[in-house]
Image 1 (cartoon, helix red, strand yellow):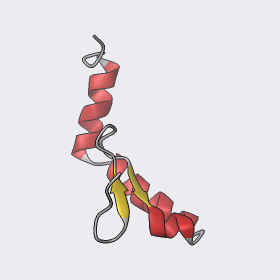
Image 2 (cartoon, rainbow, N blue to C red):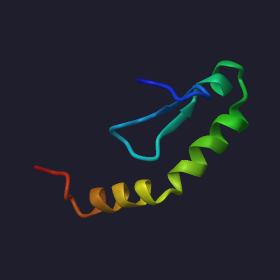
Image 3 (spheres, rainbow, N blue to C red):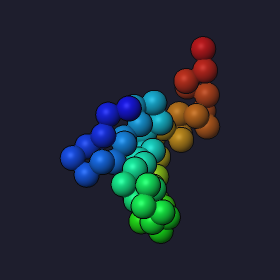
Image 4 (cartoon, rainbow, N blue to C red):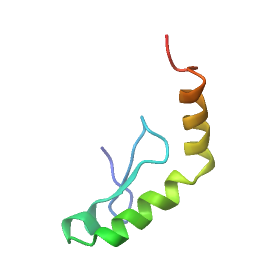
Length: 59
């Protein structure tokens, strides 16, 4: 998966899933979790969760 300039991976499949790879590699779990938490509160992630809850993505 491509990374941004800060080394953070942005999932194209799961909106709001951002992985702070530099923090993970350095064992800075608090920083990695803070990045993840910030994006799981984003409008894109909320919309994704709503779609899952209403089964809009199920074919």
